Length: 398
Image 1 (tube, rainbow, N blue to C red):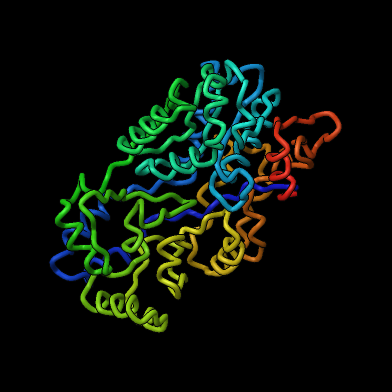
Image 2 (cartoon, rainbow, N blue to C red; image 1 turned 60 degrees about the horizontal axis):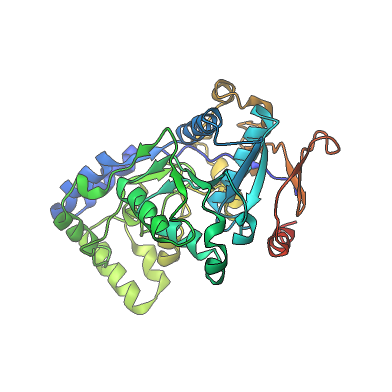
């Protein structure tokens, strides 16, 4: 299965739309909106990938990858439309070029790690917000029926969270969850050397101000709700983690409040066409909100390069003369030492979306092989997918 690590576009804040949205917001929330936008952290792809590379290099230098094997566990390992799989593609490619002797071994089930000793298991993700999602996804993925049998089997394993962006509260929640779990409480938890902390919105505005803002979206902002004013070139989080409604550009005014309330009551999608919207993120002007809940649960812009809809989005967006094309140029790739696996950064608007990608240095051919396309007979990389159950899962993506 030949894979490409797709690079997202650049999605800086759209300053013109920022001013329009603030000016058309109701007076009681204009100051709140201004402060949130001012506090918003945009994580470019270059910054994101640079920090990831630095943390991989630091992990290698500090001896967390032993015997030239990097054990990687991610939930939804076999769903190629998740950000974890997208990160895995990059890591495999980066290691193949920069550290060709290091093999990536994929772990997905408890059967893969029991009876292993003195190894480091890497958990990869792009960001920790509240910490609930990653903790629940990982721990729910394990077989609780096997706890009694295997409790003593993973005491000598280190869990390395290869995640460069996180909140302090999210990290504490993950640590507590793992320490309370009978399978992981005796494991050593390791965090990367280079971390950027994301701050909650209530550091910049009061809970009362956020409550006022969210009434315009027909949402009750709970006492314990915590949102983070941050987004990435490859992803805008859903409403559980960030201020999605605001970044989509839905103006918090009385006109929109009435339309949203009516829409939620009547489920009439035609009402959404009347919404006053100024997308706060560049390259998102052509996005139409035809299903409000879908856009809140799975925002389509910034367009995640690992989602199915990305191909159409890229095709439509690249035909727009005002688009900011790439988050990284060829020169920046060279400075990051990634140039050996650039396929094309051709900026021609007539090129297909797949021209904006990095060629894979490996491809998956079978449940237990990851091989290099350059010399498949010599550079076979075994993927220790030890259980038949895991192998069957991997087989499904071939």
